[in-house]
Image 1 (spheres, rainbow, N blue to C red):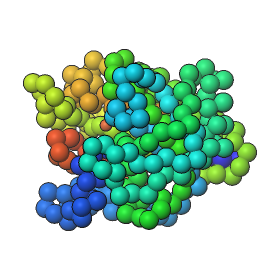
Image 2: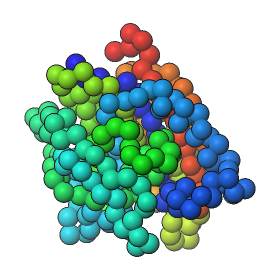
Image 3: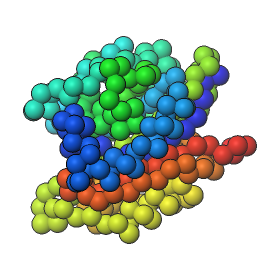
Image 4: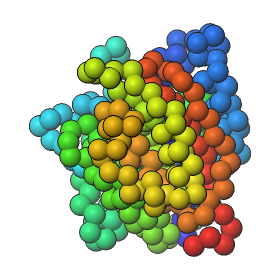
Length: 283
Ligand SMILES: [Fe+2]
């Protein structure tokens, strides 16, 4: 039986990828941010997952306003890093896991989640930056990756509750997969940030801290946060945090917080990071 063994939450700020690619991680501006991920890399290296499911949003790279899937599941055997305007990131291409991905598609759709199946897709910083943060610079990602895109770019995004319930359905699906696979799930994006308008540069440390606490101990309360509260408290791009709820929904009711890191700023974004493991005997 396959199982989800841990969850990772991480912001996916594009400038983090640029800093890694250009060897700037020890510069004074970046060092405190990357220091918070050193332990995460050790933890991941010890975990040695067989597969990673990465919940992220596409930033008008694979999809445009012509096609806006709410949930899009990557079922391909390979996903190339996208050129987002300044060349492809010098990171490995992403090997998929079509067998598990198709199993997920079947299980989720029959579970009444309307998943878009994607057989060809390039992946942008939303996916590659968290992989870089957790796996470091590497000639090859250490495990296959299943991309799961959530629309948080064009209104209406799914609710936090819908995302949480999708996570529950993912957990059920993974546990019905016959092969013995240890799966780690990533929820990416956030935390508070706003890229445009009068409140551009908005950071709300208090909201972010409360959200981190809730995600660990009271995820159903986090799942009940309405869109308007994300907009008001976390800025227009803070809505990306609903993707962390997919990850949390895929974990047990009770989890153990292995690691937390919060850093302001990276570009004009609050960066948050959590590593969560299921508590023994928790449903
Ligand atoms: Fe994003």
